[in-house]
Length: 254
Image (cartoon, rainbow, N blue to C red; front, side, top):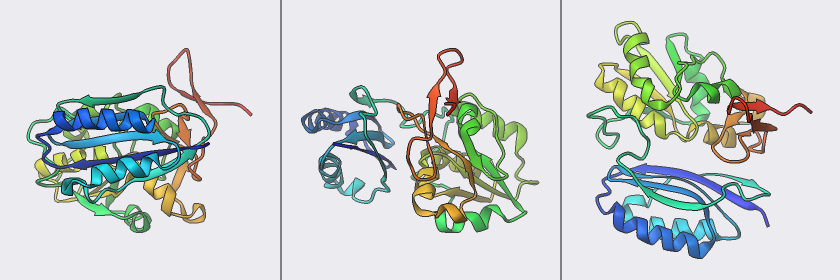
């Protein structure tokens, strides 16, 4: 039986996250899930996998709470179990950024649907920035996008301070794997005085799911944080592995 991999997040006041952690741990173990839930007082972030209707069941449980009634869920399938264990973690942030005053529930950039993304990033006035880590960008990126060459997302704030200027860069469009990093990145840019800030709704995964390959401006594969390493435009494993020497993704020679 194949596995369904589901990725989703939601920024929302979540002060009872510790109580939820206990319930999600119990529910996930009962359903035989694998993957990780990250909970914080700012919301929920997860990539999990399950067989049969287990993903539908855990989503029904989560969405029974009105705070999570609307979720953008990205799904793909694989033949083998993609994560070794099932974990539920409570942290300070659902995606670590370490920039004070950033609250995506208060302000965030303009969401751009996958269908509108190509038009936006072909605008010569738009600066397109990849918010992901350097090894992720090496696997694939949007045509013409800037690689900030960061080792982790916490360094993105320094990149903005050093390389972007609200007076020169009037329009900035950003993207990431599933959308969550761009929520904080766009809020950060708005805090810094940038006025026209955009980000790809649902991230690369939703773009690959909804935009036909013939119309795509995506080049390469999309890095994911499970045993598949990277997915091609059909959301199938793209033939990558993690090098035991460099610990970075490497394309498997056919």
